Image 1 (cartoon, rainbow, N blue to C red):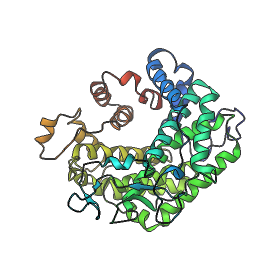
Image 2 (image 1 turned 135 degrees about the horizontal axis):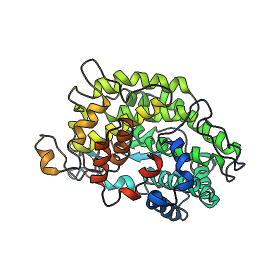
Image 3 (image 1 turned 90 degrees about the vertical axis):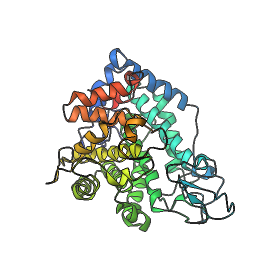
Image 4 (image 1 turned 120 degrees about the vertical axis):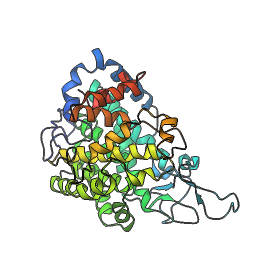
Length: 399
């Protein structure tokens, strides 16, 4: 864990220091490099977008697991609880167990009955505030981020217990499911801005130590809980996103050896087992939203490879003897991007709804830089022509 500025003295964090250099999913070293010019020139549209989002975030929350209306089976509201996305009340048995409808999201997941929306809103706000603070040096944003983080993770009256025992529950079927572990990917993506906040006077050493303690406990839960271990063995995107969480927490805690161990295991567990020699991802292509899930798992694989690169493990260029690789998976799905329903239907795979494309810019920008291949960047420009200049990607994966 990077410690420069951790005492809240206003000192600048050094992302090349500590046991793991550039310790993020974002390019923290790159963000530091473009920081001075982010508010001007070609980066200004993205900078303005971040500041606008942060300004909106000044008025939200704070959020807490204590605010949900349902109580988990443990009887402790400090335990996180969510509803499985694709499970619905049975119209033929309204008071009975929920039934599954793959690819059809139940809006009840976002209700005040559960914690999912509060957690998502907290994470989104902290990310916007932390990045706005770092780029603008305005402590107003850091102070708000501090309030949100302390309320969710540290205050004994409002904090979340570090477990996902009751995540993605299904009424009448399961109090909690292994698939619920994936809810934590939001935390993994939020930790980059915690690194950016290390120079803020709004935080002190005890705050960062408290966060380290919380995420150490969550990492222990991931390594020992039966639901978590079942998720770790999943052969699809759930297993990939498990690795992202475990690796990002280990990076945050400075555990370079553990990060390298997970990255090396991913050669067989994720790349060889999830990607075909033709670049197809069979487990994702089985889904009713196969185009989306192919991108979703690819995004996780890029995150695993990014974190692996922080400790010297190169997964971006790794290839099995029969040609399975992250780049093969990228090239397959990129050939159908931007999404065209008619073109995709000709593959024989399903996509029953408009795909969420929010993960595509980060993958395409990283691919263009990593493989020195302008065609990937051009896909980003083509697919997001109206908004790509203002996309956060311009700042967090700068050229």
